[in-house]
Image (cartoon, rainbow, N blue to C red):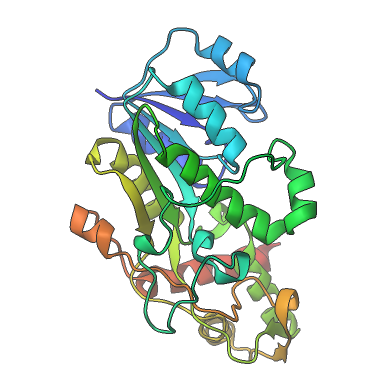
Length: 316
């Protein structure tokens, strides 16, 4: 039986992750700020992960076979976790993001060639710079300095870097593609954004030549995270379903299911809708496949997700 700690996990695919671990026979401890009740059958510890003293106190002498960190966004948080969980666990898994590859958020990232999915080696956390003196303890301040999108991507890159260097445990960074849930499980409501606009006959804001991107559904990202507990590998791994999808293709699917016609408004930069991108950085998922994880094809489940979003929107 695995003894697993999940930091966060109070919403979205984190809830499914906890259920999968629990139902597989693992003993699960969830740490969060107590804003939502935990899933039944798990141990719940209440602490703010930024409060190092409190976090250490609630953990007391607990040890774990693995820790899955769902809510690490900054190198400051990673440094606290490295100190607190050193000696408590041999394996640490951080939920990261495909945004670490976004060339728009760092001059150190070379733009990917269109049509050539980005592999894990494109961003090496062991060599990624973590400049001293940056106020990562104040996320709003960093967002003011870097901008929200760059702050998110750079915070994840630097958090990975802190864990990858001299950590007292094995470290895994799961770099997730854009996550879509089915129906009410779609926490971000980005899919519903497109459904709403097309049903209402409102234009969708897109770049002139938008690039496709990578997706994964909430069930599969939860399954992959649970799988990492006993998988044995270390380092970064991309988590995305097979096959890319672009914003126009997504809207065409919605239009086909609703009997409407998608109308587009060409825009630049930040005005574009959530899945319209003016650069290419879709992900190569072959490392996960070589390690033994089997992804589905995006085309197999995306129509179902769209149908559920349409029903949800019509019902609302």
